[in-house]
Length: 480
Image 1 (cartoon, rainbow, N blue to C red):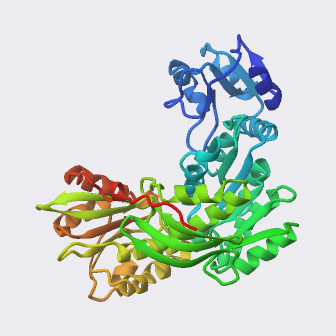
Image 2 (image 1 turned 180 degrees about the horizontal axis):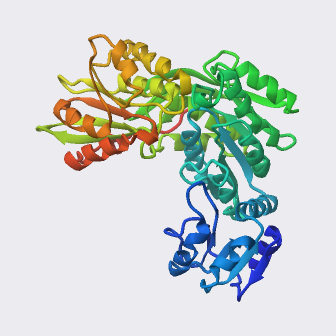
Image 3 (image 1 turned 30 degrees about the vertical axis):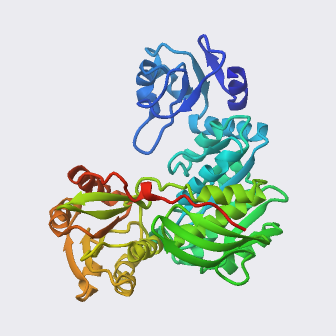
């Protein structure tokens, strides 16, 4: 196996190399015994500076750059020396992709990428070995790393591909070469790096350039830039274009939807097959994601009924809609953790989720919102435009944090009751003072604003109710 690595990476062996490795790591802190440590040079850190730490933590092999070799003279470990470590990892990923017979699915979009990827990982796991991106490993190092880690006997490979500038998806999707590509939706995320939504759509459409011959594309018919995406996909020679959404022309269609205590229930049609779908994640946007998942799974050869049954057992990832019941003053309140990230589209989805959340007697719906980042000159306008969905959802209390959220605070009337603070730390005591039994509280911001600290503070302060919201999932099955 090590010989195969050397050949794939065009590397040069130094020292007594092990026969094989147990895994691949780029983080010296989390490297496991038997792993190969790839000393990637990032924007802030150079992995070569942590090579000795990786060895101390059990790395059995180092992959290092030729130019850095003199500085590693005191590091006593087997090495594969390459011209560029990140490029070598990409070459290894290409080799891993070439040897597998897995059905490969790639996911991009402005919102819902990680949720859709996680859904695919969970619902396909009962039908074969699934290899999927860890967390949001969707960039210039995360995609090659995920590819390089893919076992040969993988049945389904699921890759998230992201971007915040043009020309970022193109090289990554050409490594992945998916059989199926999903574009979840186009929205005003990373708008600070683009002139308009059309430019964002063009950047997302780069994913079509890597789809294998005879492959499939799934597009959101309800998304604003559907026509542009379809035209681009056709121009890339893709003839198998499938459409999901609520639109009557969708061939993967959401026909009816209703919220339930633990998620939602829907009537769907997937490429001619009608089913009742129960999704173990709350929110209409999650049902939309589930449509794309069901369509992709069927096209990948999975048993659709088994996939739909598995949808009822889905669990939200931290910061992406996790719901907890927490005790307060002799009662309890519901915490909806949406703190992982935010843009205008996902903010609206989060507000709708809060709108549909049940409250106890006398309870209020409380939105705790932080800045949405990377919106550039559009930031003030897009933050202020959250007034409409908040008022339409009859949210009772709005607590705001961050410089950009001041624009929303300035335009909000009362109701809803609203307060603004400069940051999460200043907002924390306001939140503690506000919450009472029966409330539903939704916390959402871009990751860099740090509103996950508010979630942690609430979880630390208030004990969980034994049958939390997630544990009350009914996990209902499928019917024809």
